[in-house]
Structures are given as structure tokens and as C-alpha cells.
Length: 323
Ligand code: F6P
Image (cartoon, rainbow, N blue to C red; front, side):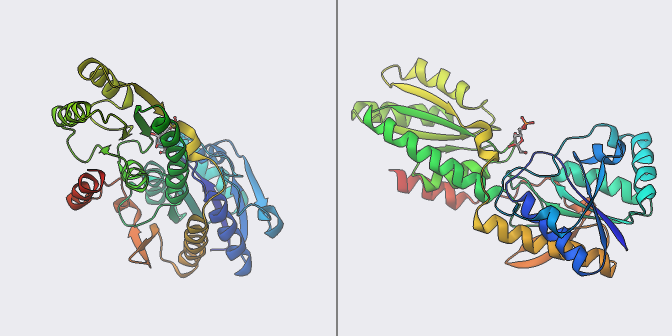
């Protein structure tokens, strides 16, 4: 490998810039030429590829978003699209790729690597943490801390007004952001897609609280929760527990932005380094992950979306601590 390309793909996540920086600087250290591919796979298709040097990644480790921009490219999933992408990469002599993104991005990379002679290395970057083969994904820690900060603020006003709040957090079909932020903010209820929502039990507990005139209640719900999210839950609660002064807050995209946490910067720097090392030593078509604080490599086709089991003991602890 002599010339490598780096790109970010899928939803952006804080810490992606730290990963880009690590890939570029490690590559240069080992004598490689490094190119930045803009807007995910679209940059490969549209020949939007720029040479990078050490200075191109100066002063970005602390920035959210991604300097390479990102996209979810449909055309790359078509054979014709991948052919075009390959032809463009060849123009620059690029013979290795680092893809920072989620499982969708890695599926594309695996297809591409099967068809052409350009090895691909994945770095998990998603706030959702829904990947097999790693304990951390870049962006999760920052997103959770952003959610915690926001929910703490909601709790102040909730408490002042004796209100019931239903806060919806991101995570697509995974409940990690909800579970972690809910526990850390002392939520009375946490509703996630991994466990069945017992709406009757929820209504029952709220009715009991109503009897005790204690209706200050924080419910953190994951956007992918099977009942339909915060608005749906609120509809039922407003009908069945009409005395509760119920409000909904959907945190939305603020969870994707902001300066990455120290943890996300460290994980991104670590993974970026090992991604380049992998290309250099021929450890091809793997995702670089971290398991039990050790670097771990998973074949790209196995680095798929995974709903790691969320321990039932956590849900028990949530109940005990909120009672
Ligand atoms: O995968 C990251 C994520 O932020 C999910 O948590 C969320 O469901 C989705 O992306 C939102 O995507 P978009 O920014 O395209 O609306």
C-alpha cells in the first residue's frame, strides 16, 4: 500500500475528525500519500478527492462534525456506482481505504473489497453504539454526555413545576443512549427497543404515584422504542393519567454535535492508528474495534449492526434506584 484514501460515511459522530487526523498523520509518518474523500462514497463516485498533509488536519481534534463531510450514498450500493468509484480511485493510484462510519458503510466497503483490488479498513463511528465487534463506537460517549447535560436541565424545570417529562433520545433501533443517559440522570423509567415496554405497568406506577401526589416523573425513551417514541407514550399517559402535567422533549440532532469528549478523542486516535497499521501489514477488510480495552479486529462482513444484549440486571437497578 502506498496511497490511501480516508472518508466518513453515514451519520456524523463527534470524534470523526480525531479519527481522520490519526489516519492522515499515521499514514504520513509511515511514508504513505493520503487523500481525503469528500461526502462519503459520493466523493469516490464524483471524483471529489483531495490530497491531505499533516497541516490539513491541524486544529480539528476538538471539533464535532467531519471536515470531510458525510453522506449516505445510494449509488455506491449499485454495481455501476462501485465501478465508477474504482476508476476514480485508480486515477490517483489509491490502493487502500479507511472508512469511518457504521454498519451500512461497512457493507458497502465489503462489497467493494470483494470486487476490486483495494483493501478496506473500517473504523466504527456512530453515536448509536449498535455495532458488533467493539465496546465503543466513536461519538457515543459525547452523545450520551450531551443527552445527560440536556436532561439535567429539563429536570430542573420539571421539578420546579411538578411535571412529568418524557424525553426522547436518539439511537435508531438501539437503546444505549437511552439506557446510559437515563441511568445517569436518575430517570424513573427508561424505555428501550431491547426490552418490551409494559405500558400497563407504566400507567399503573404513575397512577400509584398520583395517589401519593408524587407525579414528578422523568421517562427517558429511545426513539426506536416499539411503542412509537415519546409522542405516542405521551398520548396514552395524557389519556390515562390526566392529572399529570405532561410534557415531551425530543432532544434530536444536538446529540450528534459538539466537541468530542476526551474518551471519544482517545478511542478515535487509537483506532485511526491501527487502521493504517492494518493496511500496511496486510490485515485487510477488517473493522478496528476495542473489546475489554484491547484493540480487536472483526472481518468487515461480521461488523454488522448488533443489538448487544442489554443486561436485565440494569433494568432491575433502574427500578430499585428510582423507587
Ligand atoms: O445513526 C445516527 C443517528 O443519529 C440515529 O441515532 C438517528 O436515528 C439517525 O442517525 C438520524 O438520521 P438523520 O440525521 O438522517 O435524520
